[in-house]
Image (tube, rainbow, N blue to C red; front, top):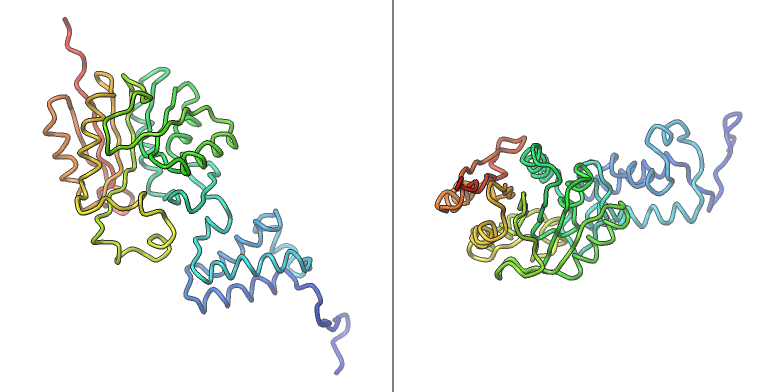
Length: 303
């Protein structure tokens, strides 16, 4: 069979082009009903080749070495089988930072970035603030706050030593000075926790066990249960945070907590019932769902 002038017959085992890899991966991901199949294929290949999307399509017929092509196909198959894209890449983007993730921590969600935004707003008028992030997981909230407020003294705790290992690695990667310690929200605030903090922030587990079946498989099967589920009482950890706020916050200190949309009013009610809380509010996310309960403790009374 003759080929058009300038065309070369592809021999068995020849290295595939970038475009061929993307097209095949997009078809595999589409057949598996994965979201954004072509964008996912592009993302994986640019990560592997160390280039951006523009460069990828500027040279679509450039061949990819067989070893790299094999690695790319393995990454695609992991996504076909349901692995989160962030686990395949080994990182997630959060508030402008590249944060390591693993099965030991929950993948940071874009909506949690508004927790950071609200926390920063609460600290706007505070110089050299002291901050505590409870249930830090990957460390994403604590690290984003330290990145935006280098003058802050930031502490973070988690019940999981494995999660703390990931958080410490992230702090080292990002060259951000955050102090991590082991702390269980189900218990009283530990001695290692700082006192008189200007901000207490947390994204605690808030999904009732009964809702597990309604979660997307990529969440239910890959994020650690301890990061997701609150047991039979969706307010369990917020009841504990009431106590931690009372013990750890400085007079006039702020608190910012991510919440389950269905229980935001109940969480706000918990804090409104506390005599040490001066103000409490609920804030919606970009989709209009209640996402944050935040407020301020009573300021010190003049003597």
